Image 1 (tube, rainbow, N blue to C red):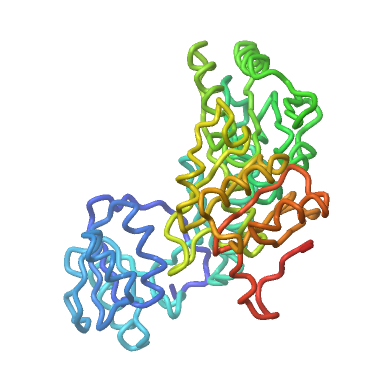
Image 2: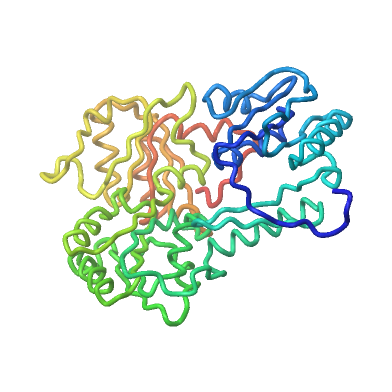
Length: 415
């Protein structure tokens, strides 16, 4: 584009049409997925290709020809991309495209091509493109800012209230930044929010003053809103024409009674959207420097509810079987009965020296981490006054942090 005039931004329907990309390096690797997603028939011509580009070819998503570019390669193309590391080859591709009246992007010198690829973002059926006169960093930064504003609800692209219904939204492990972008977007559109105690409270501060908030907390051994009342609140709100967000900690379906709420709404004829969340079972250990799996160390992970003690008539957990496993056990809601769980694992044959990590209020600024062994964890947790919410990780992975140098990951609040 030798002209200094602003580019004319247009959307191309490439579905089923041939696009030729010359070059198989990292630039091609970044640009191919969107071309493939557009439905284009993509042919890549390159001397060599990255493993990711080869993977697209192996999966049948693109055609890959490992050879030099030759004049005539753009025959039948609707669109072309010159993405080699040789300026002379890129110039020849642009020249052929010009003769054939095929628009061509030249990645090493945008102004020398006949088309420019905008920085794009897709959001709920809308594609946003940004051109900044060849200033790629600027266009990318603006694109990202627009996408984040759409995702967070700062930009209202609908201009009207969300239709009535219920969304079960997983709020993540505690840090408000760890809610999914979809969850935050739906939360921004809510008329009524029914929030758990473990849902990140900072998210509620972002709500407008017109949004009604219902506290559905269940405090261990304390006050609790009955599940039937919660279900009815969701149903009544939706029937009143409101968009209701049921904001839960972690993931709605991992010991969160989310499916009970979905069933109640379904029986009442209420539409429900389920937004998975980042579960505390995996994210909280990660924040404390504990990987729940590690090559050569743990080949299985079992997530267990500590809601009832071992041997309780309502318990569905085979603690003897768990004790025989060599991998990782992640215990949720088990701090109050930690001595009983530790004794059950010891009685089942788990070695007394098995590493254990307890994380209280994980991913938040008040996170505390206790490191012990299976034989000492109950006494240590009591001495350090560890309280709910806390997660307990049993297994060799809990001791891996000891092998990390002082330059390794930072772990907050270790006791």
